[in-house]
Amino acid sequence: MLTSKVDNSCRFEGNLIHVLLGHEFQGSVDAIHQEVNVVLIYFGNMFSGNQGLVPRHCIQCGLWLTAQEKWQLGCVICEGIWPDLRGEIGEQLMKERCALHRMWTGFRLRENAALERQIHALKYQGRRRLGLRWGQWVANSNNAPTAEAQPIALIPVPLHWRRQWHRGFNQASWIARGVSREWNAVVYPKALVRHSHARSYTGFSRQKREDLADSTYRLGPNPPDAAIPIVLVDDVLTTGTTIRACASVLEASNREVLGALTLALA
Image 1 (cartoon, rainbow, N blue to C red):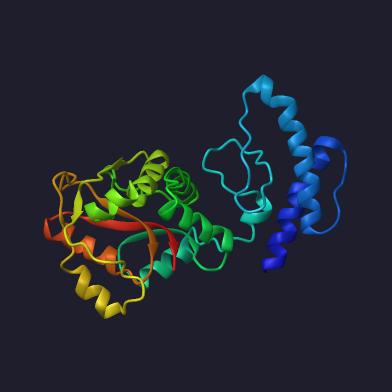
Image 2: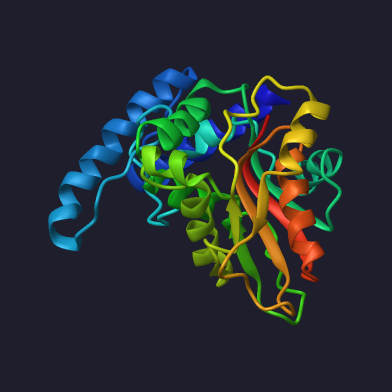
């Protein structure tokens, strides 16, 4: 199945350039990448000065991206082999760990080194705008919660103020901002607060995570109106403990938590 997706993606890129130049590309994935990149760079140099195009490149192979959508992060070939979980499969996998009405996620973590580097750069290298683009990427190809009559409130999972001060930003807030651009939703960055400062839950058992999370979060100074459905936003879903703890706080204040969205599923 994986080979089939790569072959289809290669044929798509090759046919695209064949239509433009009357030249057919043949060979391996790497050969097609190289040839297509040369042509796209040529077109980019020829038109960018006149049309104001800003070259953007695939995060994995560096291929120049022809699509002008700001949320586009990979070329057709590379995105074809990403462990993409956008859609029903990802939603079902998330619901196994966190039983909310609606769930959205982007990709499976630890199955692609380039995607792992993106998460690491977002969280630990200060590249906050990656969160914006990845939020758009996840939201753009997933079914937005538009069937509900009410507007949607996006609530990022909060960091403790010390961790946010050290990092300089909350990555979940930037992801939520990207999602809001695609879903026309409102972000409430201060709807929840994390009032206890502890090290990451990474490596803890499920029970230990739940014990810690139960006393970690509380309602913040600026939550949405109680009538507005809420979607929680975070970077990675591991056991679902954090999402469940945040949902419990909101539901205890008589607010409806519609679901949750994450970039990745661990």
